[in-house]
Image (cartoon, rainbow, N blue to C red; front, side, top):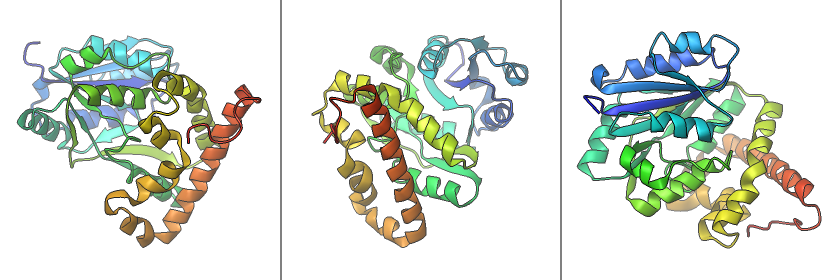
Amino acid sequence: MGNIKVSVVITTKNAQKHIGDCLASIRSQIFNRSEIEIIVVDNNSNDKTKSIAYQFTDKVYNIGPERSAQRNFGISHAQGEYVLYLDVDMTLSRNVISECVSKIRTNDLAALYIPEIIVGKGFWINVRNFERSFYNATVIDCVRFIKKDIFIETKGFDENLTGPEDWDFDRRINQIGRTAIINSPIYHNEGKFNLKNYLIKKSYYSKTFEKYVLKWGKNDRIVKKQLGFSYRFLGVFVEKGKWKKLISKPALACGMYFLRFLVGVTFFIVIIGKNPLKNKGNIYE
């Protein structure tokens, strides 16, 4: 592994708008640059994504068809003791890698969650960020910084899943070792909120939820939290004293519940449309 401590894997597709900022944030870390490896795994971009990536690293690959396969490929080529995987529209605050390395070593952890702050323009982006703030280090979240040997032990992301592959991976990590969360955030740039595109994306990711449920069982406690009404609409927002934050921002809370309702409707349209006779009502409660 030489002197490489951390391998950062970024999955991309037609991402020329974001990739420069993402890679620059890695280069700006308060951590020895020579100990960070950058791996970009592209999926047949036809814009300038690859050419921009080559300005930061010579480890640029072309693999598809989905991000699970891209992540597995990138991490399989990683030389670092630790791996951090990112979406291309994410940037790191300057202390992320140094804090991750310090915390995972000091506490003998398998992996770490990293708090996510959603940035962009307009009220609905503020709503999205408000909602996301409740999910950090819950069953709705997923670890991002992992010991590579632990990743290998889990066999990586399930390439049959697109959407819930993060949940599936997180569960298998937590079966192997202890996890925790750091303080330094990742910034997720969602730009200007577009409701139609948001729901299309949620609809696309929900198409393999049934495979995820079949894998773990519809009566599984965590599945019922992740896909059931009671936790997704109430529990995650009030547990551990979070209800105080919920009631402190009534406008954002109302906007959040409006989006959650639309996502729920979209999810059931997808599920019922695939199996109209069997799926009537909430099968995950």
